[in-house]
Length: 405
Ligand code: SR1
Ligand code: MG
Image (cartoon, rainbow, N blue to C red; front, top):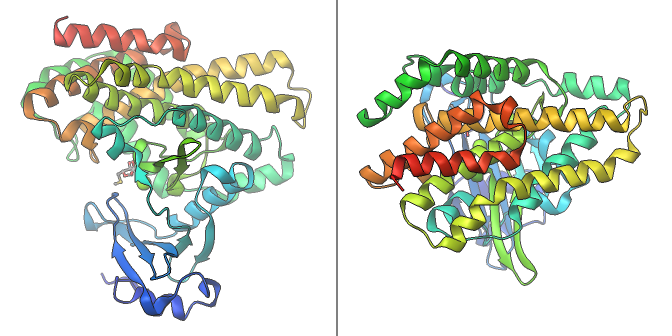
């Protein structure tokens, strides 16, 4: 069925900008070069640059999942969620998100800063390029968003309204199915090479693992702690080297909703795992592998430090300092489990990651096996592991098991 709104093309973007007063003066449309660069799973993304070097990025939601086609309808209102997520983050960590220019609710278009010269982090990780400090920036990003949108700093009546406004059920359903359910059952969306069949079968026979995955799904569906990014993988982060060091910008919060804070941290660490597995099977330089190996703790430490810095400013002192310790402990155990779920889904289910998919066959099998065994142990043992610092030893053991060293 044809969309009921105009779908932009590179050819129609200049005229669209001209007739949208909120976008006046940002770029010179007479000299605009427009490319559609959407390589994600859902949307159209137009990057536009004029002869003066000024730019703008337009993102338009299609009324279906781009990866699959019109057979999988999906609300285009996801772009409203993305605007909400960017705006909430922009209020507390403006240096970590692109500037939001305008949300066109009629055409489901979000206009924002064009991150000219920035690269998608996953592409840089795939090349073996380090961006020191990005892991810590992302931990601070999660903490700043968690604190600023939660009951810790928002008045109860306002926070309940924000939570209600941010409901994002169709996008959450994708996560519930693809992250928590389908990897653990036979499902049409699943696919993997034959060599992984015994690994996947073992996972599905592990009743303890299945129980933990179910419990993590339940928390994802019910624990409305704070406004999450909701899909915080290395393809949702742009990176750049500058004179003052590496910088990052978080993009694509269209899956944002009120959920458990550990989900965003787990998403990051699950994707670090894919990068680490790629690096070890490709025998990348030791310093690069070490940088990756330390990133989960770097992210957690920055998250924890920012939460502790903000804690004295909380609105409600019935939440004691002891409560913060219990809360951080819960977030850590959630983080470990969600990291595992986010990694497993990228090997077994729909929407895989280039870190693993674009490896030669033998390396693909080894890296995917390392990911599955590490991720499944994280899920199963998340309570006994207890801290993000304990996660690295699991990777080391599983990598040694698979690579025979
Ligand atoms: C059907 S959408 C598949 C995936 O794309 C997004 O990036 C999310 O990760 C989602 O799970
Ligand atoms: Mg995305």
